[in-house]
Image (cartoon, rainbow, N blue to C red):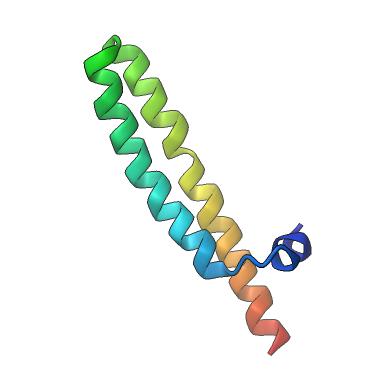
Length: 71
């Protein structure tokens, strides 16, 4: 999987950025949902998007380790 990500042109910095963006999106989706829907559903949206961040960070770390081992 890491090879496919690297072949697609992604670097560890891209994945770390995606992790931070997903944290921001989590907050934004929660705020928007609290105004448009019930609080319970808004919490679920925030948590759903917030769960992406650890995945992006983990992939970023794995890709960073691979980048260092290739040097």
